[in-house]
Length: 84
Image 1 (cartoon, rainbow, N blue to C red):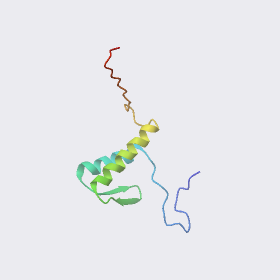
Image 2: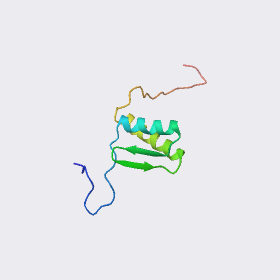
Image 3: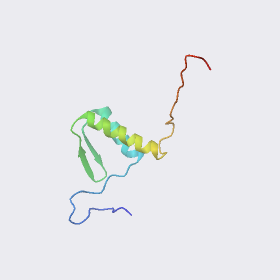
Image 4: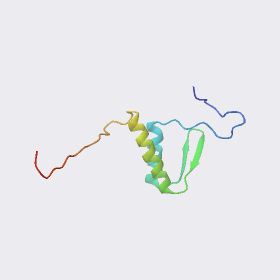
């Protein structure tokens, strides 16, 4: 079971919950051009918008892997020069 609060003697807080709301907050920050994002009780300032986009893409991949994002499908296309 993961700790819910800071661990005594450890300055690093527990990781953020990976939810659809977290992804939506990142996407709204990207759309508005803001580098500082507030999640629950913490504020994260990204070095650049590019870093923010990378974080949003990473969260989207994690959520898609958990089945939390619907409509994410993989397409496989086959091409041949001899016909099928």
